[in-house]
Image (cartoon, rainbow, N blue to C red; front, side, top):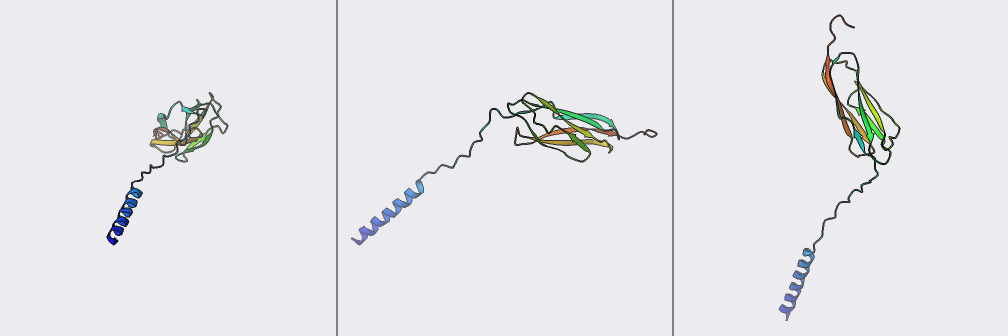
Length: 146
């Protein structure tokens, strides 16, 4: 009788262990981002502006046209140049649907040699910033010129 009781207890214990471990649980699915069909959409006319060869000490300006192709206002949250040798100008006003603005980047051309500078633009159209680029080669001043 004792053996039967112990055997029954062991069978019940094994049954509980097997059922406890065999329960399948699905991993939680990540929450899907809700896409706003009316959201602003930033469209740049170009991503790179190549000045080519420029004279030392004569600043050059590149203009990047930004158009809102969405249905809600586009806002430039920030625009930063990679160094102090590049000055930026851009509108702080919202860009209405179908309208455009210009981001101007002026390079001071003080240092001789090849250069590549970036402008990082963050808007409300995308969580990821857009990186624009200006590049070229600054040629040394010729002797006798000011």
